[in-house]
Amino acid sequence: MPKYIFVTGGVVSALGKGIASASIGYLLKSRGLSVTLQKCDPYLNVDPGTMSPFQHGEVFVTEDGAETDLDLGHYERFIDEELSQDNNITTGQIYETIIRKERRGDFLGGTVQVIPHVTNEIKERFEKLEAGNGVDVIIAEIGGTVGDIESLPFLEAIRQMRLDHGPENVLFVHLTLVPYIKTAGELKTKPTQHSVRALRDIGIQPDILICRTERELSDEIKRKIALFCNVGTDAVIDARDVASIYEVPLRFHQDGLDDIVLTKLGIEDGKPDLSVLEEMVERVKSPAREVDIAICGKYVDLRDAYKSIIEAFIHAGAENDASVNLRWVDVEEIEESGDAEKHLGGCHGILVPGGFGERGIEGKIRAAGYARTEGVPYFGICLGMHVAVIEFARSVCGLEGAHSTEFAPKSAAPVIDLLPEQREIVDMGGTMRLGAYECKLIEGTRAHEAYGVASARERHRHRYEYNNDYRKALESKGLVSSGLYLDKDLVEIVELPNHPWFVAGQFHPEFLSRPGRAHPLFREFVRAALEHAEGGA
Image 1 (cartoon, rainbow, N blue to C red):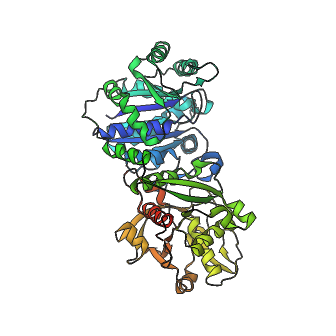
Image 2: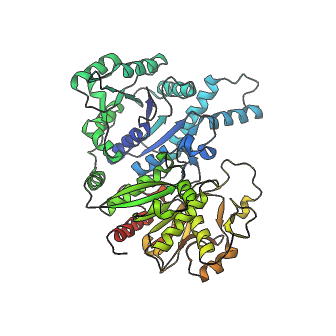
């Protein structure tokens, strides 16, 4: 039987439960244990796929094509394991399943209730993950904060899990806030006390408290928290703010968190190997060089919309021994001014990320055109590939009105068009081209040089694709198709050979970047930007 660790949060949201959960997973895996993580989201959406980035941030896509919470990106990056749709539970999924069962008559005329039907379905999702993975430890993060109405069924389910599996097999970790009141010059423990009291009112006594704080927790503060929250002093973990999220596991280890977890779960294991993370953190803290890269998007005021891209640049920067300074450029401002130089001048690289909707699209096209004509390294992701193809078709091939049918359904030159299998689809949720597909890399191209292999599996999330009807025309003018999905002859990567570095892919490489193993395209893009910064391009 595997051990369970349930991570809850209190006081306020955005304390970092996802990072805390991922860090615990990293520490346990570094000690030789097999680990998986699960996120429980209390919203009624079946998944975040139809939600605006302003509502939810990035949608992370798993290998099997599930659209999931961005915390699964943190989980995959920290434990370096592929997760699946089973690793993200939402209230919407739970209720959808229960209603289907009720309509089939599975409950034999009984009244369907939150307890036991909803809580049993939640517990089945935990145990399904157990059965399918054969792991030593399952870490499940409960979204929201204690006291939220939406989270109550999940909290009741994990209370029951301890009864079902025994206290020796279930551990409760509670993440809370110890704020510093500047005018008083004091750290205040009362919010943490109230948060723990709310948990205890519903029958959950936390075993470990992780306390987010700006200032170091003194021994006196730790003793006070331990006394009023009924935990051992050694189980009060100081989670101070750090410069990089990759320091968090190292800080947790210094505070003895992994030792406490193993002791409470009755697990004996060896010392952790933290060398890869330690080396990366050192490089992040003390880079030899720096480079400025513009991210040209329309959600730039909400950085969580580009969370995996940000992390991929950290990984790529570390491997190039450089600090990547990200310049956030609102493409609507480029569109309104018509002056790409004003917003992109001085940048050493330009990235146009994925996105949906017409807003700001001409600004993205101008950004791609600026990179092409000025010789600035360019990296396009998903929609970033579409705008690069559109700009090339207009400016180099002379295809007036070239566009994507996503934005111009009656375009005279639809160089980007809806995938054929998408034409009859009505439902919006979970119906895109999703998950991992094989990409054949053409020898002699920058893409092949970056990967160093004949093919690669990459994750997708899109409905529109490079239109093969225009492929010969664009290739005749110099746009190289350097990556192909052979089963359906789809162009997955395009590039310009007579350019310092101009590569765009239909997929989302950011989802596969890892600490100590940056994605090849991000690594080479940063390298090209550094060469451009140093005058070598």
